[in-house]
Length: 259
Image (tube, rainbow, N blue to C red; front, top):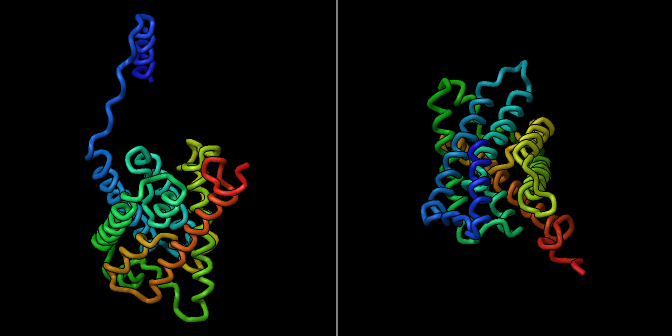
């Protein structure tokens, strides 16, 4: 805070002398291209690691509360500290929705998604090293093995679409839409994750993130109904982007009813 005030005093002095304060140095290629991808790897890795451990080591007395709080708080903290580096996506549907709403360049969409998947595998591998082998295998690596039958399949798919849509709408309104942007975005997204995990854990496991499902599936070699955790979240992200572009977005973002 003191450093900021000192900089402002310097700028005022320069203006009084008729001089312009020095312009901020533009980001170099590493900071524009490689650093954001590395931040997505690291952020997704720690999110998946913490999430997997919370599921594998969850005690029956805690019920859904422990995984819900862990996932929500992990999202809030990681978004807050890495937002200025990569935007803190850590989730392929978020990346797609943010691109469709003008929040990033097309050339970075592919690298972001690949980085998130790499981070998911690394995080699941860290969880496998940390947790007892018997618990890890019983939980299928926390690869969301809640789907046991066809009767639960379509309810789980709908749950993944609807709940991912909710979280993505919050992300877009809090961090992308100009009229509703807020510094509280990490807190709001974290709270929404907690709510969705508490509400939908018994339906689909509340993955809402293909990278979160992909890493544990790779490490545990568990692929039963894995496609649900791609199709559902991506569908929810696309619906959320459509809601912003057609209904909820500000004048700059909305593509209809602009006059």
